[in-house]
Each structure stands twice: as C-alpha cells, then as structure tokens.
Length: 562
Image 1 (cartoon, rainbow, N blue to C red):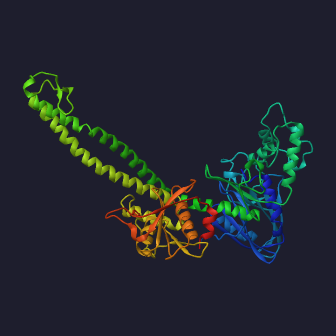
Image 2 (image 1 turned 180 degrees about the horizontal axis):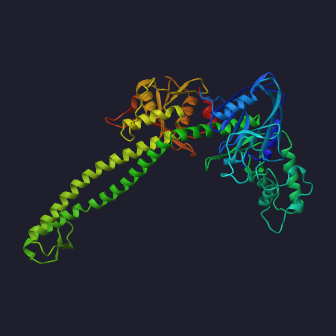
C-alpha cells in the first residue's frame, strides 16, 4: 500500500494552505468521490476525497470531472452543512490514515456551527463521515448498522467512534526501536509493520534494505536514516515495472526500487498522474463489463472450436489411406475370399508389403466400396474443415481486436463497440425510445514533436472511417505487425522521421502488445491498404510495408495528445 500513514502525513502537511479557505463548491462526480472546491490564496483549489475500494485517497487535483445532474443524498447533506464554510484545521490522527477537516459554517439563522469531515482511508472500508461539534454523526458516505458491523455504528445520530484497529506505536515518538524488535525471530520488516502505526510494506522493506545485515546497531542506523528522509520535503516519484505492467508511487525515492523512476514537482501531480488512467479504466470497466464478458466468451469459444477443427482435419488426412485400401482391394479382388479379415499384398506405389483390414461379413467388392465411400466422405469433410478453420481464425482475430480495443477505449467509445456487436449479431439489439443524437465518428488527434498531425482510430468503426474515408492515398498508415491494434495515419504529405517514429509508438501503445519491449509496427501508404470483400469491421490487408521496432510510454503518448 503506497498510500500509507507516512504518505497521509505528507499530504496533510502540504494542504495546510487550505486552512482559512472558504468552501466555494461541493460536487460528487462519481459514487465514491467527493470534491471540495476551496477558495484559498486567491485561487480555487479542488480537494478530492475518494472512498474507492482500490483507489481510496485524498489530494488536490487539477483534473476536470463531470458532475451528475441529480445530486445524491450525501452530497445534499454536505452542501447544507458545509457550503460557504471556513476551513479551520486539517489534522492527521496519530500516524494513521485518518484525517479530520474542521469547518466553521453558519446555519439558516446565521449562528456559527462546527462541522468535521472525517476521512478514513482503509481500502474497501474507506469512508467519509460528517460529524457535528459534539462528535455526533450527521451522515456518512457508507452506513454501518449494528446488524452489519458489530464493532461500531455509522448512522445519523450515533456518536462517532474511530475504527477498531490494533494499537501500534507512532514511529515519530519512539526513542529506542530495538525494544520492540525480536532479532531472534527474524523477518524484521514484518515486525516493523506489526509494531508501527502508518507503516506499509513499502517503507519497512526500504528500512531493511538500507543495510546488508540487520542487528541492533544497523537497524537503528537504517531506521533513523529513513525517518530523517521522511521528514524532509517530498520528492514524489512513480516507479514502473514493465515486466508485470505495474506502477508504484511514493513521496520520496526508494533505494529498494532502484533509480528508474519519474519525478514530479508535487505530491498532487504525482497522484493525478498515477490515478488518472486507473480511474478512467475503472469507469470503462463498469460500463463495458457485459461487453468484456461477451467478447471473452466468443474468443474462448472460437479458440476451442479451432482446436477441434484442427484435430478433425488431422483425422481427415487418412483419406489417402482409405483410397489406397480401396484400390488394393480392387486390384487383388481375385485373391480375397468371403470371410477373410486381411489382405496381405504389395503396395504398388512403393513396392512394400502392406496389410489391408477387411470386414469378413462383407464381400470383396463391398469392402472396396466401403473404403471408397470413406475416402469421398473425408475428402468433402476436409474441404469444409478448411473453410471452417479459416472462418474461425478470422473470428478469433476479430474478437482479439475487440479485446484490445476494450483495453484502451474511453467511456465515450463503448457505445460504438456495442453497436458494432449488435450489427454483427453477437449482441441482442437494445430497445431504445430515444433517437441517437448524432452519428458523428470521433477520431483521436495527436500532434507530433515536429507539429504534424497524427490520427488514431480506437475502435473498428473509427478504424474503417479513418483509413477509408479520412486518410488520403499518399499518406502513411500504421499498424502493429501481426498483432491486433488500432489504425494510425499521419495526416501529412511529407512527414518527418520523428513524426513517423511517434506515429509508430502510438500504434504500438494502442495494441495488444502495448506492454511488450520492442514492438514491430508496419507502415505503408494508404493506397496499399485494402479491405477484402465481406471482411469484418476494422479488418484490412496491406503490402509494400516497412517495419519499425518501438517501445511505448504512457507519459510520452499523453504529451502528444491534442
């Protein structure tokens, strides 16, 4: 957990500038997020409070968020009690992930009243609770009744109690750390985690990694060294592990994670960057969950079908053997007697002995006809199997492309893919009384470092529109080599080499291989790109291509986005 008690401490220190600020606006852009717009130092600052199960946090944000037209009940309560209020203090409780924001506001008749927002950052148990001056709960983002939570009750009118947690030591108040560590038991990092409040595995691993061996002397040195760095001004970083496509953030560089990291000017910029794409992915996941399941089901179904078809095709290859047996029986009809179980003869194709199985209940002529009939059946089956294999492979490519698109689309693109699946007959068409407002197809635009325009299609409808309607014949077209991905076009007649490389990078990022190292990207002129008759949406063939090998980086891509 990168958002630990130490990280909470740093943010609380950094947002003290909000104290004496006036709450100008309160919004709830999603079912787990509250944004307080606070007028402070002659600027409007957005304080984001999130109770998301995986992304619970609080920090200042510069991101734009859409707000629902109909405000939820909890938002109405906050507006009633906090709108126009003055922030009196922002405090961390101990070294835990508990924060209290004291606010003075006035009621309907103008009397001053104290209200406190309590933010509990505890993963899926995270909560935002509003209490009055006597610590009675006015309302909570999440309610806990005595029936659902025996430890405490979060309901209007009840006295607020802190979450029941194991009592731990505040690391900033400990004088002798060795009193609390059993060196004979080993696993020092785990002991540190169990003993000290606000510590995460991230920081305990860092303390232990600072020295080759842990004893009473080196532990004190390492502990004090790390805690001294914790007290300094934050130097927020994000580490990325490409091997598992994972990022980790913290408010300072960590020796245990190496030197490969991105730096940020403020903690808030770091968190905006870290959670931006994750929040978008979460919203897409919620909206497109049924589509993801449908695509995955069809993909698995077709892969299983292809395996069976290939096995059947292998079995159909015995047709030549069936034909040979029929010919040998016909050629040696005079040697066979009714009741014979085998025909021992010479294969006249290679002059080697061969044993041909016979059905003793059938005449020699009937045995020959049986083998010819089996040969013709397998021959017809093999022709049909080739057609079915080709069709199934085409379906697999199609659903793999949809799988890739669902991994990169925005919320606005979901309806395009749903509509495409409806048109293809894979999803039942939804009945809608509302007419679609617009059939306009949106193409994502990038501007290269050299100021040239690069266009991207994020789904099959956009890909077809970009390649066959928008792009001109002499412009360069890009696609990952033999990998499902998006269509990319440079909308310039004479693109620079830098623009070509950046277009290839965009094509690589918006592909199934986006997390790989060196990704092959083909590019050719649009006149060399062809759509076969009857092909599925987004499918094309091309020739006369050149291949580039590129790597991708989200931040580099984002800088080019118009």
